[in-house]
Amino acid sequence: MGLLIQDKSLQPIIEKVKNGERLTLEDGITLYQSPDILTIAQLANEVNLNKNGNKVYFIQNLYINPTNVCEAHCKFCGYRRDPNEDGAYTMSMDELLQYVSERYTDKIREFHIVGGHNHTVDFSYYVDTIKTLKKNYPDVTIKAYSGAEIVFFSQISGLSVEEVLNELVKAGLDTLPGGGAEILTERYRLKMSPDKATTQEWLDVHETAHKMGLKTHATMLYGSIETLEERLIHMIRLRELQDKHHGFLVFIPLAIQPKKVTASLKQRTSAFDDLKTVAISRLMLDNFDHIKSYWINIGTQLTQMSLSFGASDVHGTLIEERISHSVGAVTQSGLTRDELIWLIQGANKIPVERDTFYNIIKVYQK
Image (cartoon, rainbow, N blue to C red):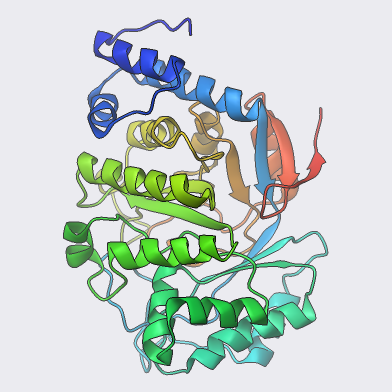
């Protein structure tokens, strides 16, 4: 790789990447501490080009949040409500269908479903949500319920994780989203999300799903109290699970949002950190096919830049995103297909419309 290197401490890492050697936690620390972001970008871009060429993927999808009632009290969440709190809601099946019908187009390939840990309804509510959508929209992929939600369902139903997943699959579940991971260390989780699944429980849900033949997604919520070492431990734990079954489709680093839209610049992750985290994710997660740049959290222009930092996916149309926008996200809540195509082509990449499993729907050549 003919890189112009300013930080010579990166040379051993460059050699490792060139030779296909796996990076260590210490290598990751060196990357995060290096000011030479352009060398890191070139390195991550080379890795991505070898995996995906100039293709950048997106999907036409719809976010659905059937309920915001939640028993958990995560420090970073502005979305949750207590059962009788102002703004709390739990959609009936009729309300769910009305919500979807008002936003649905025949180009939508995926319903992305995440809600609260609503302890006022039975597990059957969550099963019925999937069953209702699958019955009325049989050709749309159902991506539903984070690993933390699956653990919660197990707790309220008395079923094992595998039994919960089997019931959901029978109802029409196709894949799990990557949420609920946050940072996969117990120090972080005890401080930030003590009421939710532990590190091992989240990993066990996804491993169980992989063993059942389900493909799933993985996220990392960065930019709060975690150390750089904890970010890398998170990536390495995902990498180790990926080695076992190759069940993860994509890794999605998520920049944490401040509590208010009016929050100052200092309360947000920096562009430098966002781009570097995309690039380091690409370098550390050598057994992941895709790194997704989540435009909802870092904005469309930084997402466009990230396509030269190792990202190969810009997520989707979303239509109406609520969770990040319930706190400090200042981006649009949805983009059109044409806007996503424009964004990708503006980075001199080839837009590829995909389904949930990265099967190609259409390639958009200029």
